[in-house]
Length: 77
Image (cartoon, rainbow, N blue to C red; front, top):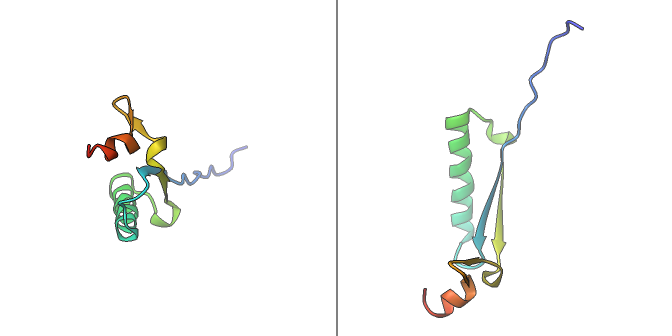
């Protein structure tokens, strides 16, 4: 069993979650490009193996500070 050990390619997967609305297609493209570039620079990952997923969450499904984002936005917060 003295064969050559192959190193498994690890595909980076990054999941970015934002509330729906207010993020343009251009901004999403920039986020994908910059996260990919960071993984290449810092972790030496190959861009063709890097997966970035952007999930848009409805504001009524996201809360912080004890309140729903939709309610905070209605009050201008």
